[in-house]
Length: 414
Ligand code: LLP
Image (cartoon, rainbow, N blue to C red):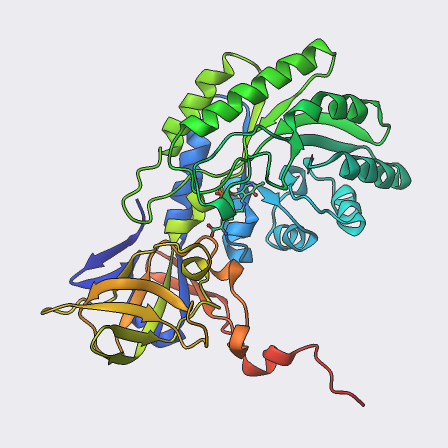
């Protein structure tokens, strides 16, 4: 459940009128709901309340510092993939000791930064990275807490671009090499083996792939114990899907209960890295209709939001619901909702039955995750403003980019 509902035939964001926000702050505009973010985070935290755990929100889903701060205040940990994300977490008041650092290509500078801040764990993705991390830690006189990301080779059944747990993907260490690499990690002076992790993909709507992965990972953990390598935590990654259309992904409590049952009384601490499940339905993207046009085959609504603002429809053919902020009575038409960017692939939605007029505001639902964070300045379009509503109050959490910011840092030749 989220807090974007119609009241008196007008879309609300919590107790704020979306049309009013669009008028005040302009469009295109991202609007997030604090109550929804908190509700989703608590759903995870409560689901594992009786078991040692850490919820590490995946920063890549939505990294605005106000979003991170709202979650940090709840006691959230964070899953990061870059020095930039780590800096955002610190800026937002997050605790470094609740940070796990994922990603296949950590640089020496990023390793140094994370070691100096004292993060919870490095999720190491290759033997080569392990050696590098050891060298950096020894040089700094530190011991790096490590987990190895193991690829369980299960098919998450999701879009190929966001499926990560198969052998053919670049992520993680192959299961058949895992024990040898763990033994190596255990022998290096700059490392302390803490955990095992996996992440099999994103937008999973079935529970079975998670359970298959878990079974393989638990079997590995048991084999490691026989070798005298004691694992303290199991990081199950993120990936729990959300409802964009008619998907029925398991709720966090059902998902967590199934994992806990599989754990079979092992004392392993569980780490979760949810991104989408917390942020997606806590945000909408609001855009205004600039022009309506049509020919004998098609009707287009040209809107002021585009693929540079919200790329999921273009990049993954993702379907996100597009709803009128103030629905009109009367007949609908079949529209493609397209942006001003000079690409045929620039659309927010196709074949949508809507009754529209120029100037209308539309809300693209489920845009709180992988929306703004994937936006760009393509076609020299300033990035959108971001608002967070909290009851009847709205806070500007990121100003709309100014035109002069577009060439910030660029230089003319002498
Ligand atoms: N942990 C790791 C190691 C990850 O790679 C990811 C996402 C997550 C956690 C969080 O996954 P989530 O709970 O959000 O599914 N841009 C794509 C999604 C890319 C996901 C990348 N990794 C999209 O818009 O669908």
